[in-house]
Length: 254
Ligand SMILES: NC(=O)c1ccc[n+]([C@@H]2O[C@H](COP(=O)([O-])OP(=O)(O)OC[C@H]3O[C@@H](n4cnc5c(N)ncnc54)[C@H](OP(=O)(O)O)[C@@H]3O)[C@@H](O)[C@H]2O)c1
Image (cartoon, rainbow, N blue to C red; front, side, top):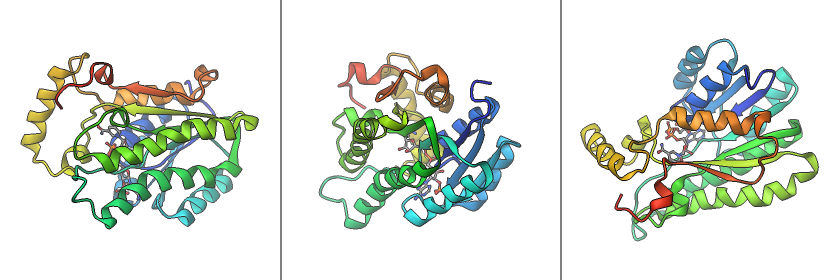
């Protein structure tokens, strides 16, 4: 019970990495709030997590939605100890093909979303609480056709430094987890590949990663428990790569 008595907000917690973090946090004794746009997925997720969970249907790119989320947490729990900015979207699009609409979708979800999630939660965050950003190993790589997503994740990465300084007087820690390749429902679908293509690509990539496998959502959830718990009370302002060693040996052909 490494998170006993803590309250956590996990944006995008209805699926994938966010859902696994939410399940693991609840098992470790935290009460978790998850957010997302699809209410049916949030309902299913809360049922899967169990007693210590609630959801708020909220679009992370809409500031009022995040203020409403923080108000609900304040009314029900009084405060929040861990804020995990996990909701995110990405897409492979070439520099020449990125439209204004796609630019806004990716930037608004990842960058504006994390920014206003934290801004909305600051009034209810306890001294010594933790912010965890979900960045990406790709923010350290020069992947072709991924400039928009990498720009968004790089902007989120910059918050580690600026917010660590800005929130120092409140002893709020700001860290990030940079996942490597974690097969989730969206990772294949959103990038427009068939299930077969995704499995083949995953098997190939596993051979390139020093750990010998692609990641699992639990790899990220375990890191999130550490960064959210008091075990990491002296860890502040870092990006923890959870990528099986991929970035260390880059460039490899992905
Ligand atoms: N999987 C990987 O290999 C990998 C690697 C590096 C980083 N990441 C990062 O990990 C995070 C989670 O990704 P995932 O792989 O777990 O994919 P996922 O299952 O698609 O998770 C994304 C979640 O974000 C929510 N979301 C998207 N847009 C939103 C919005 N405007 N408002 C509120 N919620 C929104 C989605 O729910 P709704 O659609 O219902 O809103 C969904 O639950 C993302 O930030 C991603 O960039 C993933």
